[in-house]
Amino acid sequence: MTTESRLSYFDGEGRTHRVDLSPECPRLTVGRSPQSGLPLAADDEVSRLHAVIECVDTHWTIVDDGLSRNGTFVNGDRISGRYRLRNGDSVRIGRTALTYQEFGGALDEATHIAEGLPSVRSLTETQRALLTALCRPYKQSSAFVRPASNQEIAGELYLSVDAVKTHLRALFAKFAVEELPQNQKRVRLAELALQSGIINRRDL
Image 1: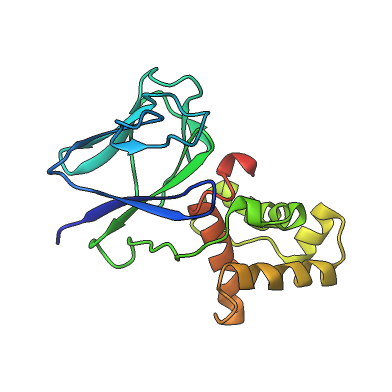
Image 2: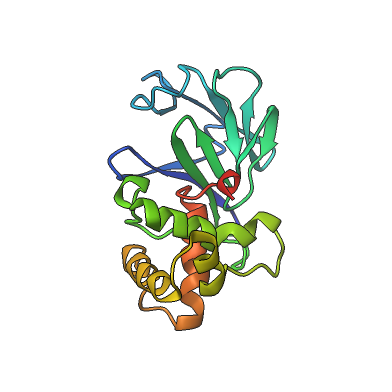
């Protein structure tokens, strides 16, 4: 089955952009220049020619071999040279966070990002701190990792458990997961926060 690939990101006003990647156009430049294949003209931390998205065989890679001034980060780590992208990878270029997605492969490999996610600017400082605490266990990259409990978040942020619950309810609504079963809300919220780039692994 053919696998389709895409990059998704939010601009400074919180609008979602999607760039479909095709082997028929195997090389895509990323930069502040309007002539870039993926132009990020509004982000002044992006170099005019910052990085290159390139298809090698059937795999998409990102290359930054000194093209950029501020570097390119994948899942919070600065890359040097070529990095093979994997489904769900978070790529940060300047202040812009992009998510790499693959579709059409095995069902358990496809990660679909919800539309209309909030932007960093739409979250309060406390909400972002709470999201960071919620996602902190994911720093371990274990297959059995689970989001932090209300008690763990309360202890880290010096809040009451009731206050944590109140903030979580607001975040469930903002991320449109409030209709999920109770045992799935926290996991999905953490996944969306990381996949969208609102929370970076380097924040953890």
